[in-house]
Amino acid sequence: MIPHKPDEPIFLICKKCHGRGKILTDEGKQPMEFVRFWLNPNY
Image 1 (tube, rainbow, N blue to C red):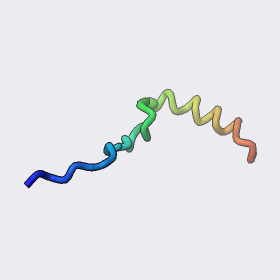
Image 2 (image 1 turned 90 degrees about the vertical axis):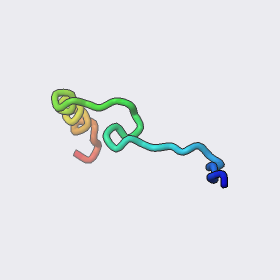
Image 3 (image 1 turned 180 degrees about the vertical axis):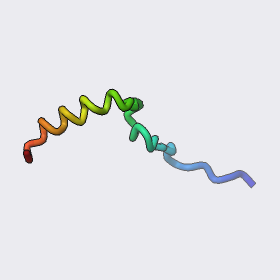
């Protein structure tokens, strides 16, 4: 028997980068959190 092939391509999203292809280091996260905090309109 031939195994069933999927009709659509299978997409897996990386749990670390969420499909963006980039992972920030701890040093890179600090300025990003600062910017996100000050751009947040709820503060």
